[in-house]
Amino acid sequence: MVTSSGTVKKRSPIAQTAGDRIFGFFNGVFIVLITVLTLYPLIYVLSASISSPSAVVSGRMWLWPVDLTWEGYDRIMQNQEIWLGYRNTILYVVIQIAVSLLTTLPAAYALTIKPLPGRKVLVFLFSVTMFFSGGMIPLYVINRNLGLVNTLWAVVLPSATSMWYIILTRTFYQSTIPLELEEASQIDGCSPFGTFLRVVMPLSGAIIAVMALYFGVGRWNSYFGEMIFFRDRNLYSLQLFLREILIIAQFSEENTSNADAITMAEQIRISSIIKYATMIVATIPLIAAYPFIQRYFVKGVLIGSIKG
Amino acid sequence: MTSLNTTVTRPGRKKSLFARFSHAVYKYWPYYMMLLPAIAYFVIFCYGPMYGVQIAFKDFKIKRGFGGSPWADPLFKYFYQFFESYYAWNIVRNTLVLSIYGLVAGFPVPAILALSMDEMRRQRTKKVVQTITYAPNFISTVVICGMILSFTNQTTGIINNMIVALGGEPVAFMYKEGLFPHIYVWTGIWQSMGWSSVIYFAALSGIDPQLLEASTLDGASRWQKILHVKIPAILPIIVIQLILSAGSLLNVGYEKVYLLQNSLNLNTSEVISTYVYKRGMVDAQYSFSTAVGLAQSLVSFVMVFLVNAIAGRLSETSLW
Image 1 (cartoon, chains in turn blue, purple):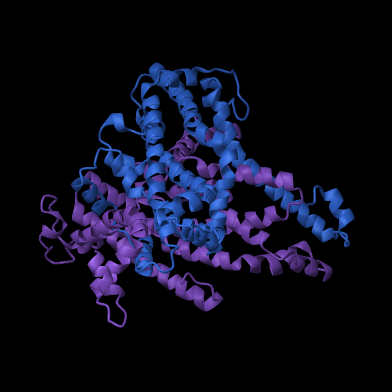
Image 2: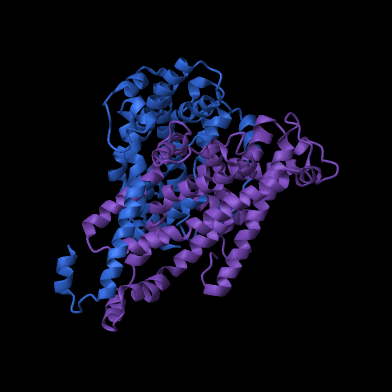
């Protein structure tokens, strides 16, 4: 591969024209612009979370931290609800991944079996759900009739799988696991379950990682279902507590004009420092794991694009 | 089970549907077991709600269930009720504005970004830039909205601090209804452009290098190679993405819209989905809000078909 523009000139038989160089220049400017635009808000939040609130609020802090303080993180440490939300969310994510993998992986494998009677009908019936849905209210009524409201199953089960992910997984099996291997294991006396568990699964590490990440990140970041179905505060996930701190508190803060000035200023100061620190605390697990999991996400997109 | 099986395997006899069915179950039951959780999921959580959609035409009583509730009189009562209301036009317009604006402004960005990054010569820098631009996609909607509210805060937000420092007047961004679509759309582009470009990267890396070399020898400039080799190569992907986004045109990201709403921007920020949620879940008007939601999904479905047909005519690329 080409490592620097210097070697390009030597290796390429045709020298770059002036036009190409101008193009390269503007392209570089564009990329730098996009990178800065993407990074700036992220760096700002990080800096604001460890800067003195008065510097943040007044605009003295605009890029790097000013008057370092850990007050925001200290306050979060003492906040029981954030940790409750954290614990709940981790629990929901783990259960969601388990349920989703159990639903998606075997089903996708069964749908690769060509002679399976009824396969085409099932694929058709499953695919219909990609384009039609009953909507929010009928789903609520069903959850309510099943007695799932105010339990974690009300959010976990309705997102157990989806035809998109089943198709993705099936495409992976079809494109990476040779049919001969499965046939050989069947001839050697392996049952379908045995073939699936001992031959297909050990070769499916990549797709298991991709699916676990898609379902896990989806659950981690979701708030709407949780907002609809959870009444009990003990069930609240991290995102629901975040919503109270980041959204509801902020709108109400801007609308209280009659509070006396000193407490008002103090309130703004505290809420400012807590806000930025919570954003960091809530996002850190994903951002920290992100460089490692990124390639699996990209892989998921690439498998998906094989079939268009 | 065994006796059934012997009748089925006897040659020369026409098999009844039942016999064929039981034979399939006998021979393939492990695979049906593997499908069972998925079938249960689709029946209960996809087809169940679809069956429940009938309450859009009924006076739904939660005690009497989907089937037992009486039909509405007239049948389309709740549809009339919505479309004759003075706010219906407003909500439909907001939904269309947010989604069409989002599509027109946001759709070309990932493709342009992919083409631009593909032109980068240094592989290391390219990897770093990719990693950076993907990152915002993994931040939750709640945190993104929290960032938007903090940054645009009239007295303490960084944007207004900058405006004041440059001698301007602070702007109450979230409380101006005219600004809502812009804030919604451009923050969405900020969050998703990197991640959405992955699929175009894949298509660009699939271009035959010989094609590019040949065009270089023919004297094509980098710009001409983009125009005549690279864009045609990613065109099918562009078309498919376009069809898919047309289908979800009415499904604006209501989770984000809901968080950014307040009483002063509601005029431009109330969309069909948030309205369905408020009338259905908060006010418990089940039939009415189901009717509104159903109208939305019907329009979406028709749009996928239309756009798919048009795309099939124009470019020979279509979903099915």
